Image (cartoon, rainbow, N blue to C red; front, side, top):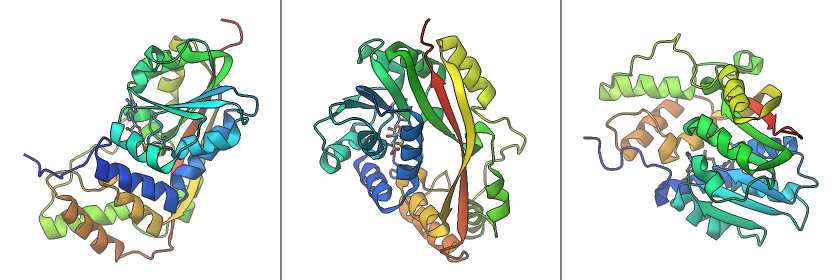
Amino acid sequence: MAPQDAILGWDEDANAEAYDAFTRAHPMYDATSRDLARRANLADATLAVDLCGGAGASARAILDAIPAQARVISVDNAAAMQRVGRRTLTDHRLRRITAPAERAADHLPAGNADAVVCNSAIWKTDTAAVFAAVAHILRPGGRFVFNIGGGFAGVRHPDEQSVRTGPTLNALIRQTAVRDYGYTPPSTASDAPPKLPLETVTEQLGKAGLAVLEAEVTAQHSTMAEKKAWLSIPVFARPEGDFTHAQRMRILDTAYALTTPDAPSVTSWLVVVAQRPETA
Ligand SMILES: C[S@@+](CC[C@H](N)C(=O)[O-])C[C@H]1O[C@@H](n2cnc3c(N)ncnc32)[C@H](O)[C@@H]1O
């Protein structure tokens, strides 16, 4: 059996606190959220839904982009994330619903949302069910904007290759764990197909009655120092397997010592803008 604190999940207070602190100290989730909010065309919105909204990094970006009298409903199934958000982000225009994204349509009026935004989460959900729920709550002409981590979408921005100066922090973590703990990395076939390529997304959106307007591979530039802070959030800490969080943090410290803090690090994303057609 894995140690008790092996991997804390989204619905755990320590993880939620660490995640929220990270989003405030580092630009990653703010930058990706603002990019999605911009693509959602929120200037005339009256209702925007923040799907898998967590503690509120994306809600902050959406609140900044909507008119003063508009509202945001943030849906997430982790009560711990929303508890932290209630403390750190209060805005009378924001309401939170604790529910799985797949069941969002059970909690929201049909055909009423101008936009649904989902930052850094869609590949963790049952996408066919989520797309159907989104199609139900969007008004005709409403936009659904989300991003998929490059590895999950099977895309890589050219900057990822050109900027790289050495091994990734994840690779150094694996090497350290093998050397210091006798860790055996899982044998994943390097040619394994990506979990959520654009082809699959387009087909599933189509079945739900949504059309792809735009799909773009973007690059997010950060540093090894930001990557280290991100890998310190329990739910993202590596390697997987029978390690305590303290052990993972020791491995991370050793691996990080082999890097240069301000060395550039690039993350690729596939950003998708879909729309419910004006006339069904
Ligand atoms: C990386 S966080 C992103 C949170 C927020 N969008 C942001 O940009 O900070 C991923 C979130 O997705 C939520 N999540 C994952 N699967 C979900 C599902 N099926 N339904 C609702 N929320 C889900 C998690 O609870 C977590 O809060």
